Every structure is written in C-alpha cells, then in structure tokens.
Amino acid sequence: MAEQRIWGLVAQFDNASTLLHGAQALQGAGYRRYEVWSPFPVHGMDQAMDLPRSKVPWLVLVGGLTGMCGALLLQWWSGAVEYPIMIGGKPAFSFEAATPVTFELAVLLSAFGAVFGMFGLNRLPNPRHPLDTVPMFRGVTDDKFFISIEVRDAKFDVDRSTALLESLGGRHVTVVEA
Image (tube, rainbow, N blue to C red):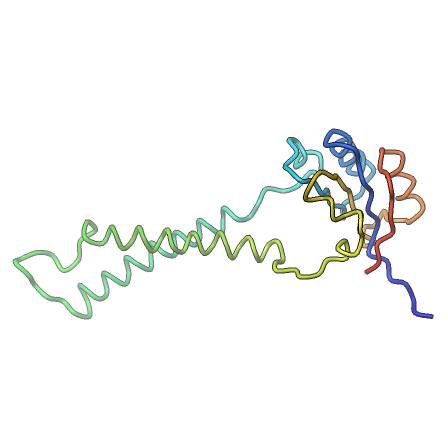
C-alpha cells in the first residue's frame, strides 16, 4: 500500500471575524507556516499574522532607477560621445530633450519590476496546489473562509493542530494530502 503524504490541515470558518480571531490565536500559539484564505481582504489580517511588508515596492524602485539611468546613459552616449552632431550651436546632450524617453523607460521598467516581482515572490504560476483537491475549498472564491496549516510548521501535529482549529471555531477540519 502506498504511503500517504500529508500536506497539512484545512478548516472552514463561519465569517471574517472568526477567521481573524483564528489567525491571531495561531500566531500566538507559535504557528508560522499557516495561510488564511478569504474571498475578500480582511482588515487587520496582516498584523494578526505578523506578515512582513512586501518587497515589491523595492523591486519597482530598482526597475524605475534602472530605466532612468539606462535611458540617460543611452542618450548621452549616443548623442555626445559616439555620434556628436553640432546643430545650431546646441549642446550635444541636454536633460530637457532626454526627459520624455527617460520617463517612459523608467515607467516601463517599474511596471516590469512590479509584475515580474509579484509573480516571483508569489511563486506563480502554480498550476496545482494541494488544496485544489479538497472539495469544500472551492467555495473560497465565493463566500467561504479557511485556514490551512502546513505539515512543515514546527508546531504541527495532526491531533493537536486539529483540536486547536476546532477550538477556534474551525469546522470540517480536513487532512490534505500532498
């Protein structure tokens, strides 16, 4: 008989307030590898889960600065160093003439930093997640609230974690296979 590999546990909660209370209790109990699933953002959930701030703004800043520096360098090099052409006594390079291209490339690379940074940090695309096999979890995009605890959590124990989720108001606690 094949060995059953466990990914973790999932429990359904009645509403957003019990979900928030459950996340606070799990954090207080020392759990770190758990996730909260809701059809809409729940105010205060980031603080309840003690989540760090996103790294995406830094990636956007790096993309924007790279675009700005790259555009300025390209225009300066091509206009003043590699192909200097004197037209009417004007300087070979001026910031005023370089502003539109600099702005556009900064915006473009900022957008790339935001999109690809979000994909990378969220490990997307992820075509298969173990929770996709749990039938009750399909309601998460409509009106259901869930908390899942991964087996990789140091505090994870099937019996104790199940009892904790049930004591927090979790219903239909289900073992999820990997």
